[in-house]
Length: 417
Ligand SMILES: *[C@@H]1O[C@H](CO)[C@@H](O)[C@H](O)[C@H]1NC(C)=O
Image 1 (cartoon, helix red, strand yellow):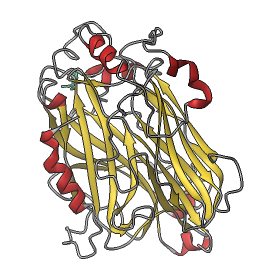
Image 2 (cartoon, protein in one colour):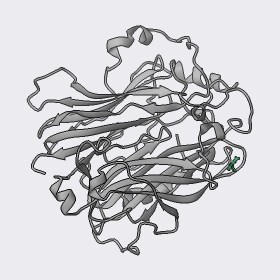
Image 3 (tube, protein in one colour):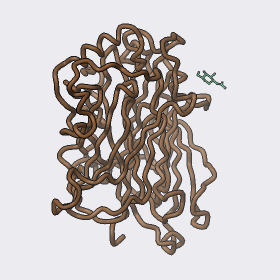
Image 4 (spheres, helix red, strand yellow):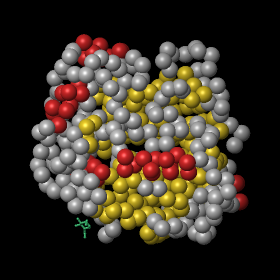
């Protein structure tokens, strides 16, 4: 899908996501830059004897356009200081709120489409020429529990000169502009004699993305042409060859509406092991668990209508598009032949009857994995996103299928730490 309004941002993002070792310093405080809105301390939950802190930092406000302009999207990027220096981030979570502090979600027409946080001063282990992605969240708002709720003394270490770059993308399905604030909850333990004594370790974030680990656009890619049966798998190719070894602490994933699961897959270096790899973590995608994740389909309650409307494949007109798209020739997703295992009969059919599915129901959570095992040097790792549009309605923008995503962030304690 062409989105000319976003090309400039894309180019900028590509250029600036490069590791910047001599960045201009910002004033040495966490609430910096044009977008810092508010900062407030919260009660820390983990490692009570290590002088932990927890800060809620609000960024914004961001004005999202009405749904008929740019499909209601607002995409930006900005530099800001980290919440602390010489400290270990032990948990991070993102939320979306209105300026008055109430939660904004799909039922009120606002999506935290995604927000990605990179450390501009450190390079990514999977994309060495790119900045290190340290956190990512979609509208499901998964908490990244790096220290496993305080049970493992480990966190993402922030150096004295580190600088963050945030990439938020918000979406509005209302007919009027809406303002929103991104709220990030950072919990951390300072580097001190206490944390040294407790054996605190640094984690390495490992970013895997079906669009490749250096994808500049947070991995949003078009639905592969010629997908038959509405079921397809996207896989990161080539796989990433690990040059680290250690223990995987925590794995999170992000996908878009229509997905059923996100697998992180390991293949051993010597070609032994399971053909096609071994699934280390299978993120299970759940829909509509809470009221906030459901918007009423087919009913014009102030949003979701018009050519920029989102989602709700059940709205008139759109079905035609979908049928057109479905009947386009044969083929598969990028993930070669993964659906062969369980999808053969779908591939034979020209027109697949759409099974009943609830409209306006969105991804509400993706399960995470804790301590799924080790990573070894020389292994090949990849990520697979499994989609089934017959089961869960995909996102639709302006009558076209919206791009899809599949990405995972793992936190690893490398050996010798
Ligand atoms: C907060 O703001 C939103 C958006 O303007 C509004 O819909 C909601 O009613 C407000 N809530 C309160 C408690 O003021």
